[in-house]
Image (tube, rainbow, N blue to C red):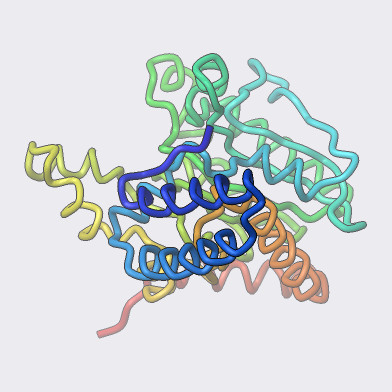
Length: 311
């Protein structure tokens, strides 16, 4: 059953009317309600606040990494384990084909349903997850296979075991190693990009965001707790943090915004997957046309430009 946020309630009502009209084969009513739906979608989604965009990024029906992998990949084979401790289900690594292009896809997976969420640790990877991602990237480099990374996590897991096994070192090593990988890397924030948990698979030749995704150094809830000790300040914190793709593109922290359907990827997963696949394949051609030295030089300049300023 679909989940609707507070600001989507009118859309829910119209869609229910469309279903009812279909049930009695009233085509005139269907056409009328479809027109109403289009207007309501434009009205509602054309003026979203930053907090509403955050809600969409966390929407329970939003496609997760595994949804995109199933929609865009063929003959996908999952790679397990970091060869040091265990397999971390919060990070997926799949080798397969995207429209004839052999590709390694790495994604953070939140999970649906209570059992699956617990299995995936709510999308919060442990250090062995990041080490698995690094193992997959090194494998891709060895066989000259490009890498697509799908970011969707509230953050790296902050538990005692994760810290004992070197959480910060695992993240830092990925940042260091990914910067020198000799194959094209494209990273897409498909939902929630939380702090170092997102950065660990965010070092790439292209870092882009879906229309209703967010990327932040800390969650708005954490920010409001630290600055004001007041949970009611979450909306204020969301706006102040500048978490939306528009804000980040303006500050040149990302390269592009992917235009998922206006009504959101959670209502049209297939179109969102097509947009993501098309962007990956189009930009991959440009990156593959570069020599290894040109690729690494371009990546170095992109990464060192982050946070740069002049007086």
